[in-house]
Length: 261
Image (cartoon, rainbow, N blue to C red):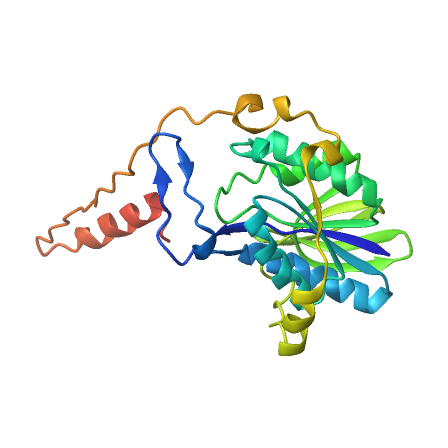
């Protein structure tokens, strides 16, 4: 079994997010960036599947050269191989271009399972996995909290608002996982040392087979038009009790309207 897992190098979500007001893009400082915590859940799920059924886990990432730091953490966790697509022409790429680039590399690996986070922790669009599934012509199982593989069939529990659904799909399949799927392992010292020595397969757009003119900001079909700060206003309501007890009914009615009860 071959499993490909997506790994993104993002600004540390524990730090304040900085946005360039002119470029309307997140400022990405490699010294303050980490492997997306959401992707660590996907990596753990992929590793557990490989350990149970046998096979190989390959990480695929798109980003600057500094993104190799995130990939090496994935390798320290246990990922055997990694591919990094890095090219100056990719700067400012939209979700669709990102999906095209990742899908092109993933298709060349011919995986049985592709695992991603539900959405990245920096952009939160959630659009890339679905676009990839369409481009790879794979069924997609979303918001997955558990995965079982039996032959050529995957059975998964899919989270939704009031519980979970049990869904099935035939391999190959693309799966997006939630934080409930598994607790990511902490890389061992031995794993970290081995990860430093493992080679990373670095490719530019030419190697991927995508024209540089159709990538990056120039080729983006999705544009950020404006940025504005969120205005938070506290809403209060005063209920006065004249001694009749009617205030209780008024408070209950208000809470029901606010869907607090």
